[in-house]
Image 1 (cartoon, one colour):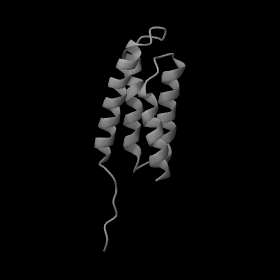
Image 2: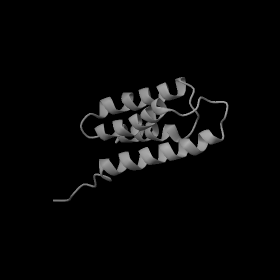
Image 3: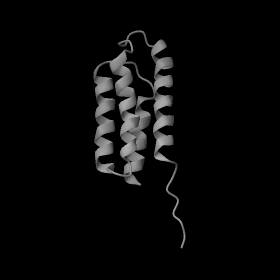
Length: 97
C-alpha cells in the first residue's frame, strides 16, 4: 500500500507563518509612520491568522473564515501593511487541498 504525502506538520506551518508575519510586519511598520503603531492587539491579530491554520485537518471550513476575519480586522484598524496576507493565502491553498 502506498503512503500518501500529507505535507509538513501543522505545528511547523503555524510556527513558521507566525514568526514570518510578526517579524516582517515589525520591519514593515518601521517604514510606514502614517499608520497606527503596533500594539498588543496588533500582535494578537497577527498571530490569530497563523493559529487558525492549525484547524486545517480538523475543521478546514472554519479555518478560512477565521483567518480572513483576523486579516480584515487587522487592516480595518489601520495597522501597517506587511506580510499579514501570508496566512490568508495559505488558508486558501490548504482549503483547496
